[in-house]
Amino acid sequence: MKKKFYFAGSIRGGRVDAALYRRMIEFLHQYGTVLTEHVGSSKLNLKEQGRSKDAVIYEQDTAWLKECDMVIAECTCPSLGVGYELAYAEHLGKPCHIFYDNSKTQLSAMLTGDPYFQIHPYGSEEELFTNLTAIMGNES
Image 1 (cartoon, rainbow, N blue to C red):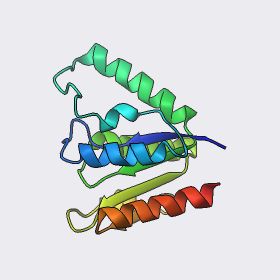
Image 2: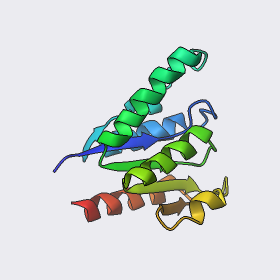
Image 3: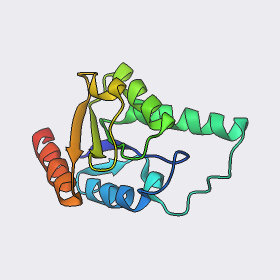
Image 4: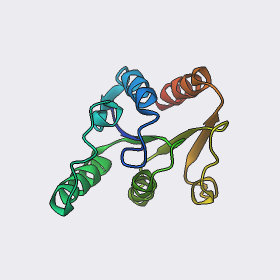
């Protein structure tokens, strides 16, 4: 059965990992639909802000969180938005898998201390995709 994924990655917090997000999203396409495909785009307009635009983003993202079957978050680049999305997903009871490169960052204790989240540290991109493959195999 094809799943609906909510992919979470830093946007306004920094786009240093955008290419990795794109590769992860492409990988997830094998297993279903990625509702937040734009997170992997290198063409996001970060200057397009304002209360009305932000309200539209909030409404769309929370609707996608309600619709998704699973959240996949790449959290190497810290992001307030991703933290909020993860808490919202937990509130909704959505399965959440958090990935981060443990050679580049240390996750917040608010994530690592919460037993709800499935945390997947990795040291290489190969390890990240091995873990993703295992998760998808367990979800079938």
